[in-house]
Length: 517
Image 1 (cartoon, rainbow, N blue to C red):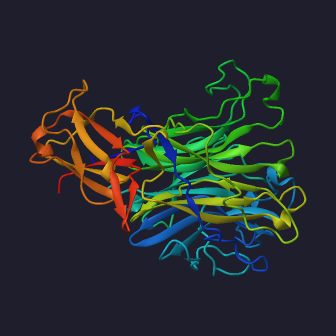
Image 2 (image 1 turned 90 degrees about the vertical axis):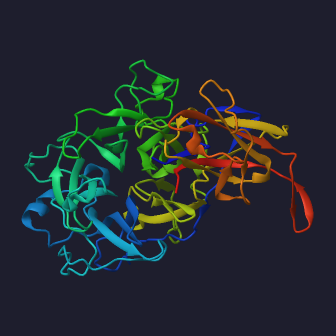
Image 3 (image 1 turned 90 degrees about the horizontal axis):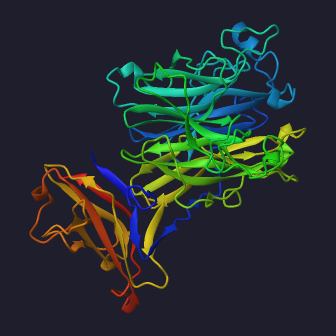
């Protein structure tokens, strides 16, 4: 299997000398790529288009599933669905005009300009001319979708996990319990969905992403911990929001466990926990994406406040090898700040921005895209200004961060953990700048140089996939054996640009080990 060794992955690239990690600042598109429909319309998303959702690049087209919020109840829900919205959930504080759901669908040729096709599935305020998806639950959120090429059944090619609230009727109908939880659904086309499982009945599960990694289906969500498991405390004190993961081998059967995924340290002052006093927490868990042997994710950095309407949120960056346990490449680093990706303001008003994550990280050509949500936190009497939109941040492909020389060093090194080369041969490539200052060698597991594979050259100019060559040698000569890749960085090399000589500043973003062509 091809391997991607990212500079931000300290398990794959654990060894270094005279180098440090330079994290990349993504470019954020100021305008939203998807906004709510006009407030005056009868559209299902005339109040918010939340990216508690997914973007896939599928068959040359971009496809988005997202969570809508609308103003004014849909009178056309059938009786069973009307029971589910008989009263608003507690987080709306009895505001009967705000309704969460349904899930909606959009399409785009370029991932920037989106259309909301008329699907004809849901009768909504007198019309089927809308982009709503017909699901058995009314009050829904979190459209986390994957295209599963590993499933041989075309009727199950698309898989979705979504959140729903149980019936709000009086007396309540209890087949789903009383707590919001998740449902699993499958589809042949991503549009017509069949629910196949409700794995955690009457258990609170509020998720943000769903991936397939390492042969398992993994859902990332948040919990409000009754017992802290973060790095700072194992003392049984009540904790705040933290990220956890549920995993299944077949998507239909889910063990009744969760696994710790990612949390910020709880405050040392135990009196702060569970009191509503402000401290930073992990909102909704990790918005993860699998890239074969490694996962990259963003998490909601929730700046808690005693008054909900004062809460704001940023996005942090995390990485994982098993798809479950995530870690920050630079603890405390804010990957996307709310001031860099502010929500569209309400005229004459000032509300905090909360950034939200989902299934939004994907590679398209030479670009890594991070779709995310911007939530205008207008609550507590300001519901007419409530708003959610979808935003886009970009990086050159896989350039989350790079190893570069320490400011006072002219030479340095980075070395990988042992990796196994395929017996039939492979190609090593570097995602790097300043390649004139890079050399690449191979070591055995005991750090001994492998004859003939020292001082490999990075061919060509700077780029996202620069091949590495060892003169007169082929990687197939090494057979199926574990090696370490040693990259040396040297500032002393000179480059000439537009006739001017300048010191070379090498930067290594990633190494790729691909099957030989």
